[in-house]
Length: 133
Image 1 (cartoon, rainbow, N blue to C red):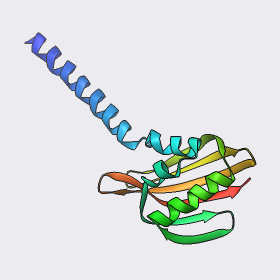
Image 2 (image 1 turned 180 degrees about the horizontal axis):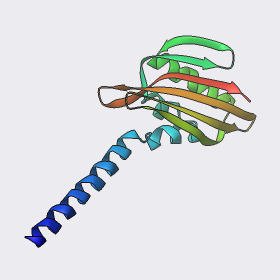
Image 3 (image 1 turned 135 degrees about the vertical axis):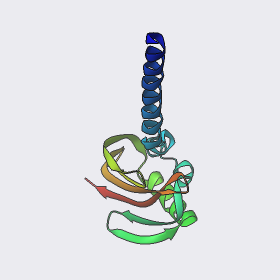
Image 4 (image 1 turned 90 degrees about the horizontal axis):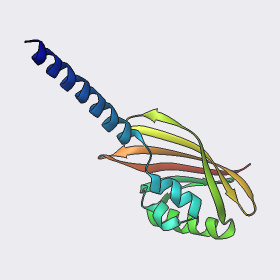
């Protein structure tokens, strides 16, 4: 009887640990999204855009289609080639996440904020803001 109690206790702790690890991985940001900023890869970045995205680059703000936003980001990365990206803060809830980071370029640093929303199980960038530091 005592050994059955230990077995059930062990199974319980195993299930708790596994469910905690799984939920933590679901909340993590996709690594490819951060790498797209580091590399200045507008194609990889646009894979995380929704159908429409609110894009603000310095003082110009508008809502663009996914393909328009990809072209605008390609132009930005060409004008300001990134040398690094440092994620400073992230947070949110299961349905919406936000990230604040610093994009280092050959021509200065930019503050980057983006808002991601859960769209049928996949986080998509709903809003992207890039401002000169």
